[in-house]
Length: 214
Image 1 (tube, one colour):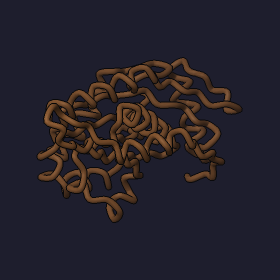
Image 2 (image 1 turned 45 degrees about the horizontal axis):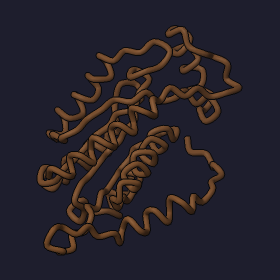
Image 3 (image 1 turned 45 degrees about the vertical axis):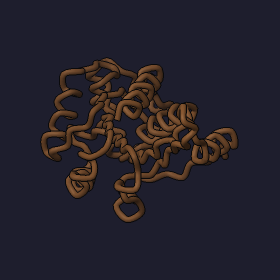
Image 4 (image 1 turned 180 degrees about the horizontal axis):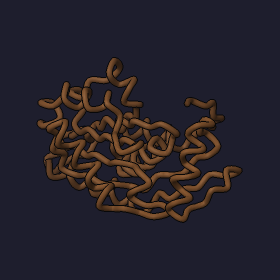
C-alpha cells in the first residue's frame, strides 16, 4: 500500500552529491582518477529499506563517492548497472520472501554484477525486533542469493520496523498478532523502529573498502 509522505530537500546532501560526482583524486603522478560511481537499488514496501539505502548512500558520499539511489522496480527501465563501477542492492523481507521482481532483475544482470564490486543487504524483523531470529534472517538472505546465483562481496541483514501507520487494515491485524506473539508492541497509534543505524554505517564503510581493493 503506497502512502504520500511529505519530504524536505536536504541541500547539504545534494551539494555533497554534486561535488562527489565531480571530485577527482590524483595519484603521485598527478594523473586524474575519477571516484567510483555506485548504483544503489532498493526494494521496499513500507519505506524502511529506502531509509537504510539513503543512509548508506549518505555515508558513501561523505567519503567522496558518487551514488545514485533508485527503487529497484523503476530501475528495470531507468538504470544500466554496466554504467557504474559498483552496485549495491537492498531488499525487505515480507512473509519470508524478497520481492520476486528483484530475483529477475539480478538474474538479468548477472554477468555485469559479477564483474564489479557488489553488496546486498536484507531487511527483516527476523534480523532484529520483538523476538529476533538471526538464523532465519540469514536463511532468507542465503535463499535469495542461491535462487539468483549472485555472489556479492559483502552482505548483511538489518532489522526493519513495524509501521502500523502505513499498513492496510488486513495487514495491520496480521502484524498485531505476529508482533504480539513475539512479545512486541501492539499499540497501533505509533510505529516502532528496530534498525541498528551504527551497523548500517559500518556496512557502508566496509563497502567503501571493497571499492578501494577492486
